[in-house]
Length: 406
Image (cartoon, rainbow, N blue to C red):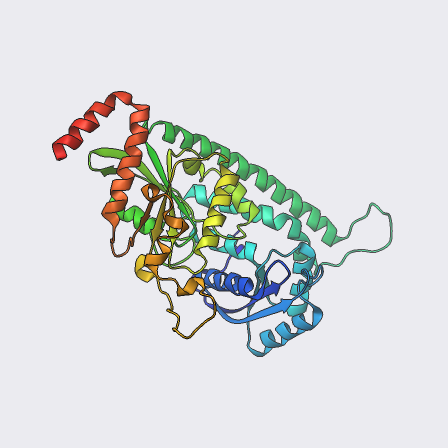
């Protein structure tokens, strides 16, 4: 699968393409393309140009109209662009036709995310999961790999040309590989399940959230460890578990892969085992980047994904991170237009729906270590409640400890 991804050290110019439809207005498409540009940058590309088109729905053959496709082609040729990335998943037919017309590498949002996951995967578990997702994505799109082979015409209906024979062979190889990878994942999952059981009855807390909201930074802060963290999407693929002690109370803290809009189905399926830490957690800590203009939609994406992978409600703390990066634009006194989200300052924002459950909400900056003690106290109280429910006889010990602290 090495030829399926680009090199992380290779920077190549790319063009981004999105559609404005009745269900996606121009502002929403701009936000999606901003995120697509960040994905492209994470994959080592330089997004030099964006193209958008208004359509009722994607063209079934070329995604965009023929005129827009010609406009993209002219720009690609004139500026020596090597890759064109579409914000939505392309069908095999669209992919084949666009590639034939533009004569450059074509990616959609799904294949770009798969590329990034392949670049980021470090352990055997993550690599196996990504490889499975790649093959599942590739299988229905395999025909485009053999368009250069001529097919024989005429003769018996049972006869096949070299292209069709090769295609059938290749499909069988990939199907066998998918079956093998699924078996490998089952074996790995069993091993990890044993590891989880060996951790005993300790309370388990899982950090969840959109990608690049600061979960790994928070993990390092709470566990005093060195989990890899950087300002790129999907910096963490493998679930990291650390023992954390707040005051006198130990618990297990796990840092999980970040979620994202339009997360490929193939990845959700293949990474379900990684997300077992979420399913088996006693408490979820939902980390939100409050400085991001679309943080409310990101919350919805995470909650929807959690429902898909688990389906049960768990106790949750809301941690609004990056308050140090929060910005707002105050309105002029003579500006009579309605205030937007960008005109509300942090103090006022904290008094909105986000603070309806103050006992489960905290605003912090993990990078600046602002209000982290309040988060630790909140964690201590929630973990203690779960611990006492599990071990009622420890209630006396907690009371004695806390009275001694006072």
